[in-house]
Image 1: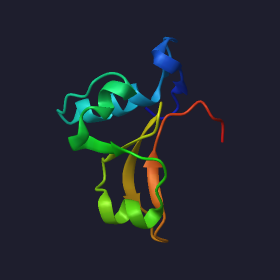
Image 2: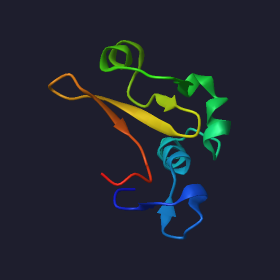
Image 3: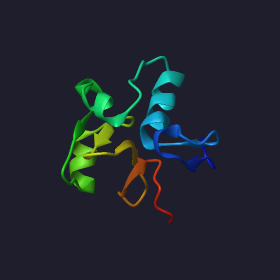
Image 4: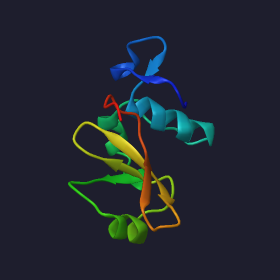
Length: 96
C-alpha cells in the first residue's frame, strides 16, 4: 500500500482512502472490516472514536492494530519507537 496516492472513496483507479487502507490491512489477516470510516466505527472491538490522545494514552490503552477514529478519518496505532513516540499508520490527502 506504500506509494499509492490518496483518493477519497477510492474514486480514482490508482488511489485509496483511509478506510479502504485499514480494511485491506485487516482483510489480509482474515478479519472482515466494513468499507467506510462511519461503518468501521460501529465495530468497537477494533478501536475507538477519539477527540484527542497523546503518546502515553495510546501506549497504555492500545495494542498494535487498534483503529483510532475521528469524525471522518481512521488511523491505525502500530506501536512506539525507541524514543517512546507513538506511530500511526494512515492514508491522508495531506502532503507532508
